[in-house]
Length: 84
Image (cartoon, rainbow, N blue to C red; front, side, top):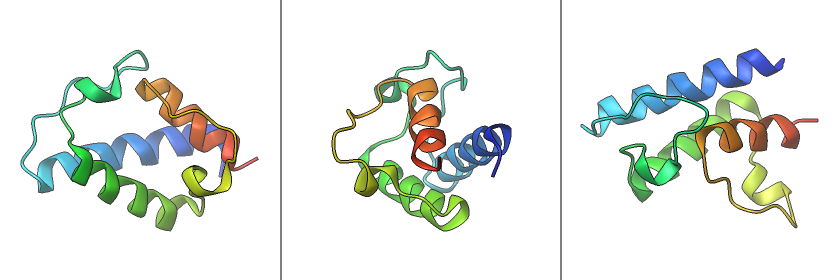
C-alpha cells in the first residue's frame, strides 16, 4: 500500500471510530497530539485493530525499539515505516 493510502485509511478510521463511539474528533492535522484527538484508550484499541485488518500491519507488535507516536503525523509515519 502506498503512503497516501495509509494516510487516507488512518484518517478515515479515526473519523469512523470517533463517530461510532460518539466522540468529538479534533481537526486531523499532522501536528495534532494524539492525547488531544478526542479519542480515548478504547477508541485507540478499536482503531489499531481495524488498521491491522485493513493495512495488514500492527507496528505496536512488530517494532521492538519504536517509541509510541505522539502526534497524528507520528502515528501515520509509524504505520508507513512498519510496512516497509
